Image (cartoon, rainbow, N blue to C red):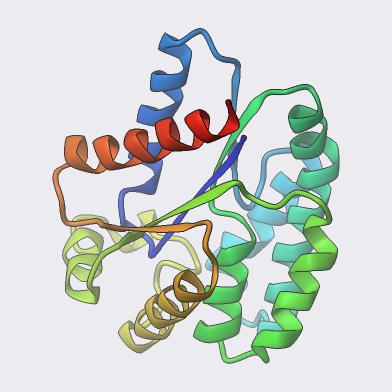
Length: 207
């Protein structure tokens, strides 16, 4: 099973990723966590370039290509081998992030971004994608708790950018059956319960 988590920055993805990992481990299932961009040596180098605020001159074309290059390396070096060995893979972000952030957010042609992602991920298509949806006001509230130094190059983006990204996710979620939209304002335990219920339904279907 390949599970991905999506949403705006500060939506609580990373917390839910860890909780789901713990859930599987309690059942003695082998689970691998993946983060994006990054996850393998080459991809981590690309991550440093992408998220460094000093790289303010980076063009949107370079940005989408770097994200895709990082993902392509991760897919072939780790994700596909893990799945072929019947491991559960959980990824904190995946290709939908590029479609939402660089396509809808940055304004790059979405068909081009989608085609580029198909090339980058190959056969690594998620079984299920959890989209933790939070309003922009909540993003600002959570972001305000951090200093400018703690924010990366993407996280310092303006509000209208995040509005476009959120709208992009909603459009994607409406088109793809694998998406599960979750109200990110719910309590952590409530969100986890929704996720576990969906996973258990999928496991029953497999049997």
